[in-house]
Length: 351
Image 1: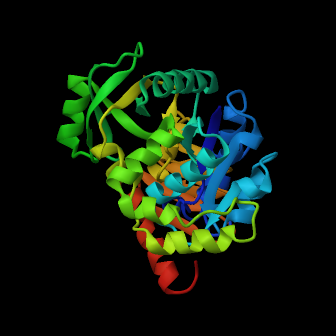
Image 2: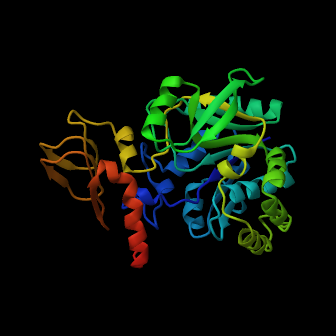
Image 3: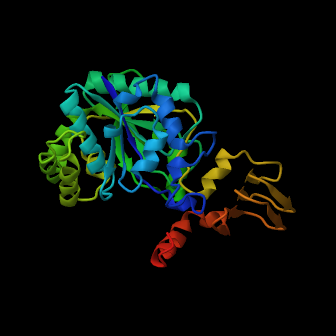
């Protein structure tokens, strides 16, 4: 059977002050009425019901996430005692699923992405599920690029796979510089790395055994089911003993028989304020506005007003965000540096 694994442990610090410690990015209603997390769950409902959803989040966020995961059994919302990046989290999910269903197919999805076309998204997932099932491959969804983006990783595709429309992965490329990104777009055959994966859970665990033996060994100590009292202490020991490593670097980039399914369903990871200019449709002046704003002789700004009114005169290319707790102003080109503000807030004990 197909099972959904939702990764919901991040904080989305680059979207501060809209994203905060008590309201992380996946709980924001960007591009829709419901939260990103709730929309992720609804989006996959035709593929797997809530009882076949497993969510991995921070223990600090578990109660917040549970409130958004309607119908998902409480024991299937796993709180990590400490974050160790994506590979240990996905390996734990695979370990749990194989014990429940030896033939489990895993669909691994981030909780905080924007998807424009739900049906096209599900069609791409079904395509990936077919490839994972019939070719015993590790499958990823590659997004057809629309611009020379330097903030995403890329997947270089090679020869056709046995599954129609799927392609063998030649290599993964880290975030490129602007010149390389333009070359990738012009040359073709390159796709954005969406961070969405499909595989047989047992196949993934085999890859972990070969490539991340410390993770595989530590999983052997997780013998309790999530419903059991011993589970929490066992996963605490597991996370204490494994290295922090991404699934891309730890597994995907070093595996054989990796397949990409080219996809186009209006995807954006909304990783920073600059991305909101693509989600909130800009007006005639090029500014993207959410909330109430008065803009005079202002152009190409991203404006968010959660309370009151944001007013600007004679400025351009700024991010201006006002919430009841804080206000942010920065050049659009510096939007990804918002993390530095959060780091300073943490130092001051205000995060």
